[in-house]
Image (tube, rainbow, N blue to C red; front, side, top):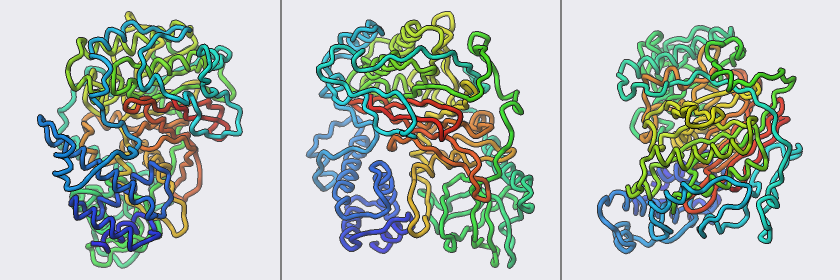
Length: 621
């Protein structure tokens, strides 16, 4: 099995500094916990991404890595034992080993019921009384409230450009006015939203096999059409027909067996039009580099001498980029009333300032929503034109909600703890600021379906400056296109993608994962927010809604993809099929505003004209 582990590391582009010791440790762990070689390498891949490690696997990293895996096995055993309380000794006996506290991955840490500071009913009552004021509210002493290093910049894009930042909080400061510097009031912002799909109150959980077939078939056919329309490629042929000559085929990457995609079990499924929907094995051994995942639609150049296997000489991930502009797709845009689309003279350069944060918005030990309070206090001083908040807001994974002991409905908690605070915020800020909300499939007060309709926020109850968009969704602010999706597509792609990097090449996994979302693009096929198929088990994917809701018509200027992977902000260049750079996009993972009982991160973006002249900072709350 050591050879299998070594082979999996090699396929993933990793090198081992102490091969014998590393393989022995991995083998022992695989035997003890019944893991396959691909399982342990996939876990190492995720571990290395979260910690920013390079492609060399060092023996010094194996100790913390294996301890973390052991903790994950502990959590799995606890979850399986539903209705039974397992003491730590019981878990250790089941796992046949000891476990201890280790550094957690960048995910929401497990809740600690013993550290709950108060009953949920008290939490709800106190939540009702918390208001946004210029003075610091009186709050109980909590792990989040006693944290250090508030509002510290963790990561900056284009640091050389001028951007007002927040200084670290001085322990001797008397007020938040000494922590956060007030800037000049923001200018009015012109907002245009893409047509919201699906509509609130839509019918879901009624998708049919026909819907799934049509969705997948259209993805392949439209991709093939884009290559032919570019004039660079001939008409695709049936890849399952034997041919000694080089062929050009378009199809979807599939896995021959259940589980993670493997190089030797990779199949290419062409369209019904070209091959009757048949699948053929794809041989990747002659490729020096590739990056593929199940559901990815690609073009393949190669030969099929036997009729059973296409020997690929080139895989083309990129289709010709659409030259269409927003004006060429007026039917895809709508202004949500004259009160939302604020008329102003056209700017020579598109500019917008925004703060983006992704839930959870409260820590796991209470429902006080202290992280949201601090974020709004920060926004009061910085005064961005837009505040973009991405769910979950009422997190179904929160310990208090799981207990079922709160004395409010989920809708009441959302209106009071979220919308009430946002109403106070816009009242304080005036008419120049707007708040945009996007739901999550983890929101307990909303439809559990993806794609997901927007929240229904009634203007009679709350300001028309607070708007909600569907998940996923796209809008334009001062002609700056912003796209968002709250499903953790980066983590899902990371778990399914296989790649090979050229010798000595850099391994930029996070950038490549974000680029996958952008590069399913062509003249007639829009980019897809969720290009993975089959979708992850925890995603309630509805194919009857996907065809109208999952695609965006052009490359956005800013792409926001909240994830439990490491936070980042990068400029991603989107190439065409010849590898020539054509468009750029700022891709952001803002992280989570609350992580367990502690604080997380958010992002502040000042967009000016193009990604290279814009700046952004990821800031610790």
